[in-house]
Structure formats: C-alpha cells, structure tokens
Image 1: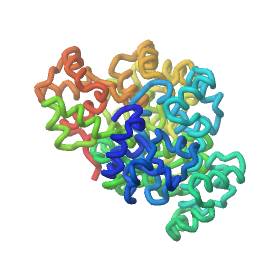
Image 2: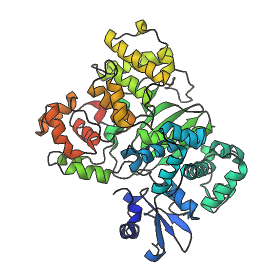
Image 3: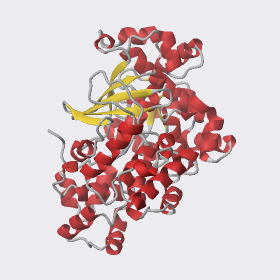
Image 4: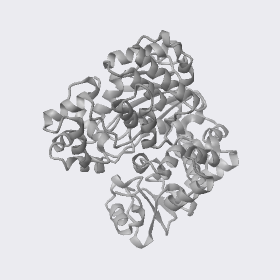
Length: 494
C-alpha cells in the first residue's frame, strides 16, 4: 500500500469487491448513485465499478456531498497508517488535527506549530487529501459528536460544545449532513440502555485496528514498566491517568480479538477526541501489520520470529514529555529501579486525581513542575541529575518540543546535544515518544544478545548495516528481537 492509492481505480475496485478490511482507512469508496461513502470492507453488495469513485479522506467525501454509510460506518475505521509512518508536512499536520489543535487554536495555530504559513498548509492538505484543515477537523468533530450521542446521556447542547462545535445549529446541520440523521435520530437508533450503564463522565467504546495484533509485548511492556499511582494492570486491563488539554482522564484498555475495549472517565467531555487519539497512538493501532511483517519476513533470520507471533506493535506513549523523563530515569538501571524513581517523582510532584475504582492517584508531573525541583532531592547519580534537570528545563521553557508535530531527525539531533543523552536514549525516545517507525537500538543489550542468538551481527555497526534491509520498519524489528527474551515486557500479564 502506498500514498495516493485512491488514484489507482483498478486496485481500489478489487479491494472493494473482495471486501478487504486491510484497506480500511487507506481510502473511501463514494457511490455516485446513492451519494453514500463506505469503507472498502462494507458488507453490502459492491456497486458497479462505473458507479464508484474514490477519495483519500472522509472529509473529502463529505465536501463532495456524500454521506456516511449506516452499515459499515466508515467514520469508525482505523486511521490511515501513513500519518504515523511519515514525517512530512501532511503527516505532521494530520497528527496535530487528530490531537484537536484546530479546534483549540484554529488553522493559524496549526500552521504556527508546523512552521509554515496558513496558505501553505491549506494548499498541501487540499492537494493530497482533497480537503483542507477545517474540513478535516469538521469530519473529526462529527465523529466525536456521533460517539457522544450514541454512548452517553448528555444533553445535545452539551454534546455540541464537547465535540468542538461553535453552536448547536452548526452541530445539528453537520450531523444531519454527514449521517443523514438528526442527533436525536442517531440516539434513538443506538443500542438501548447503553449510556445508562456508565457512571457519570464515563464512556465505553471500541478502538478498531488492522489484524493481526499481538497484545503480548504491547500490554506486557506497559504493565511491566507501569509507574505506581499513574498506571496499573487490573482485571485484564491496562489503566492509567491522562493529562489532557481541558482537564484529566482515566482510561482502561482491554485487548480483545477484534478490537481494544476502551473505558474513559473524563473530567471534561471536550477532551474525548484527544483522549481517543492518544490511546490509539499509545497502542499503535493505526499500524499496517501486512506491510510491516511482509518487509521483516524477507529476512530469513527474522521470518521465524514474525511467523511465530505476527502483528507486534510498538508500545508508545500518551505524553511525549513524560516518556522522555522516564527514559532518563531508566538509564543504566533495571526496570524496577526506574519505576521506583518515577514513583517518587509522582508522589512528590504529580497532580492528585480521584480514581473511583482506586489504584490510581496522580498525573505524571509536568515539565514545569519538575523544572522547579531541587536537584539535591533527587536520589540518583549527579550526572543523571544533570541530564534530567537539563531536559525538563528545556521542555518547560519550550526550547525543546516533543509533540506529535516534531520532525524526527531534527528532534533526535536536539536530544543528542543535551548532556547525558547518547544514541540509546535519543532513539528510544524517537521510537516510543516521537513515533518514528524506523528508530533502531543497535547498542541495546537485549537487541545485541538476540542478534547473537539468531546469527545476526551483534556489533552495533554491523547490525545497523544488516538492518538497512528492514527499513522503514526497524522499530518493529526491535519488538521481534526483544521478544526472544523471557523478560516480563514480552508477556501479557496474567
């Protein structure tokens, strides 16, 4: 699969006729006779090829006057994997839009974060996606509104503003235009008593993904490195607190064979879109395992690992600054020691939150809070204290950004310029915080040990040269190599 697939009519028609779910999110099928748009895997009888046209985004379909199919619900398909694979302007813009930046800061704020003019950003998105940033954000608002209408008992006026609409009238008009139903009709068609089962402020939803997905290393890593008070594994679910633009939240994520069950409790419903986006990013749910595993299988020494447990994802983060701090705390110490250091910071400097289920107590401290910490109170070697205090001061004053809009290569270089940052720390941040799918850890002890056991080169330079054939998916090769060890990060907790 590749950029611009929606322009390959013959290939798109074949995908629709075979109802191939692997292509969901890559393109959308608009039916000229019914004026409806669908995901490629829509269960209805495929239309005649002459009646199909294809768009790169749901927003482009909506702008062209098509409404969402009520059977396949194309607005709930997995997101395009491209936006997490690429580091160009379009991909960075799409990551920011998913994080709600247009709703909070407008298109000028989006452009400022990207370092381009508003006109340049609009022109680039329109050229590649058939829709500008406002239309893309509008499509996202419509999806959020539908979710709130169908899964909560909130009044429609509250839903309108929580979804990011500027007025109730705009909310009503948009929902009717996109779904061919009024908000009240959407709620009537939703499963009965669904909203009544939840505590106030709690939502239950399904996060889709492309199969296969192997949950072992994904949830195993998150559970094994969980910071007490911020994260926990309970009753088959990974739970954690979330720092969000308008407030805070608590999420419970449970793996199932065909989706991730997500239960969200939010202090402000306006944070729903951002919370869902960050949870999807945490679990790498928009990845394309067919493309990734296909490339890695081409190496005969990696192929057995992929065939044994395909669909490994890269465990990422909901807060890039938090992960960077934790990466420094974990330098040259065990997983248990890193958790202990992090827990001390959380207890002393994290914002307390109320968890109705108990177990979670704080948000991870913000860079601003950590920047005011007396270095002498940190129980760690002096050189690591310097590394940590330098990092948080740069994050707090804005001279270092680790947001979804950052350029991976440039940010890696900025990290390496900080005292105490070597290639391992910079690359693990690139892999798990920045989301670079090609980040690689040739100096990591576990990677070198796995390489030696498999017959791969074990010296960093030689292994890097061999790993060139795995590009652009070396971060996923890391997951398969780590999985050869019996470390708890590789096993789904019992």
